[in-house]
Every structure is written in structure tokens, then in C-alpha cells.
Length: 99
Image (cartoon, rainbow, N blue to C red; front, side, top):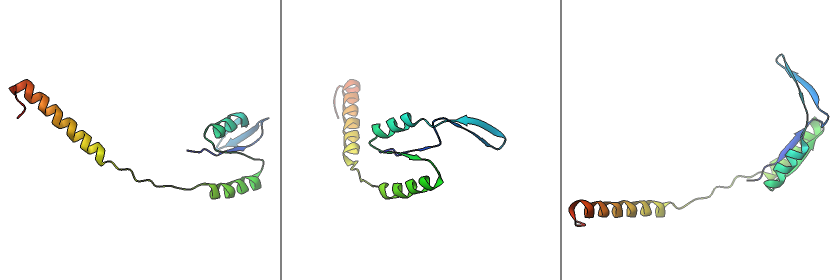
């Protein structure tokens, strides 16, 4: 799974506040770049609202959903075979015969 990271803000940090809370936040570009590199994604820096809007428009073209069907019949057959083997072993232990 690819992770596309978007950095918003400055490395120097800013003071933001909302709903009576305020905190100092700063952009950690190195961490965002390393996350993007590890997942074969990309890092984008948004310096302002216009740049952020352009980044989101470009990301829409890169994102897609893929559905894959997986065959699970073999798993049920293997489970049934294990149950049959387990019952045969118990039958041997209890009655000294398989059937």
C-alpha cells in the first residue's frame, strides 16, 4: 500500500489555536519523506491553501481501488481433511479401530 504524505506548515513552527486550546506545531518533513519512501509513495509540501488544493487534485488521479477475488475452497477442504484425520486418530485411541 502506497502512502502519500502532505506536509502543511513550516519547519520553524507556528502557534495554532482552536476551541480555547493553543499549541505550537512544526512540520517534520524528514519523517513524512521517509514514510513516503518506505511505502513507495510520494511526499508533497503545501505552502498555502492553493498549493494544497492542487496537491489534492493531483492525488485524485493517482488513487484507485482494486478488488481481487480470492479462492478459499482449498482452505475449507484442508480444514475438513484435518477434522477427518483428527477423528480417525481419536477413534484409534478410543476403540482401537478407525471405523
